[in-house]
Length: 328
Image 1 (cartoon, rainbow, N blue to C red):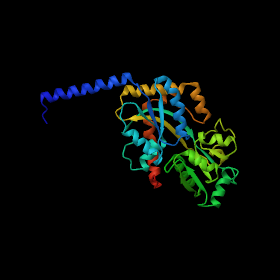
Image 2: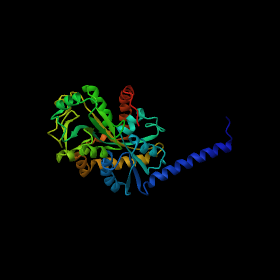
Image 3: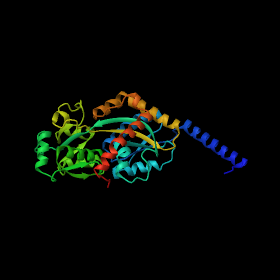
Image 4: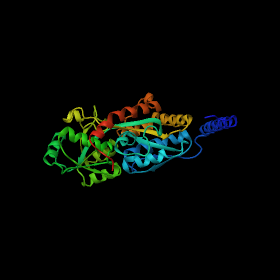
């Protein structure tokens, strides 16, 4: 196709104007509040991480970060909203393994979890715990497995939703132990925990942030932390390895993403604010008290988050598909 001289100069001028506009936008950023879309209900693990960081990042950015909880479809509704948002840095997705890894295999999404977003930073990770209602008769993990085998298809396990880490960890647990548990999906971990406390469901596999407060007051019982070492915050809870389920490790992680096409300088500012917040002693203490681990500084880059997401998709997508699990 032949391009006229006038059209060529018009296109060049247009590109230059867009580039200049993008640079100017990035230099002044941010000039108004930023919306942080959290893909689960208030009070859950994702919401807690978002609120702890948003409070500290406000000081660095000079603008408030307004948290908006958008539940449903294992977080895909919230993430889809960010995918459609303007790439101006004012809409940020707090995502996690569920939303930016497993959902790509669970749902026929109208967006691409990799290509429609720009990674900003890896925030924190946690190892899940197996817990149950306080009056469940099993005293330890081995007794729990025996009880489940004696009550096939009668026990219930709640989770943050179909395809969530808790759900898939439950499937993996059943495959590993020869048990069968009825899965009960919720719109987030918080409502699932409320039903566990009320005795409406029997068990959960979820984050320490959801579990530790109720474990400390005796409202639930814990059987194992699914990590290589015990939690400092719950030293009496054995690892799965110690409790009779060797090699059964389940961890989740959180990150920040923005819509594709967001200026590199804006991503840099958001990353710098995140890194600064993760280095703050008060933030570190709050997250540690909740059972979260903060990654080393070199793993807090956009590139490190992109590499982790890619590796996790390659690992988990075949597992999810082979189990024929689909999101509701």
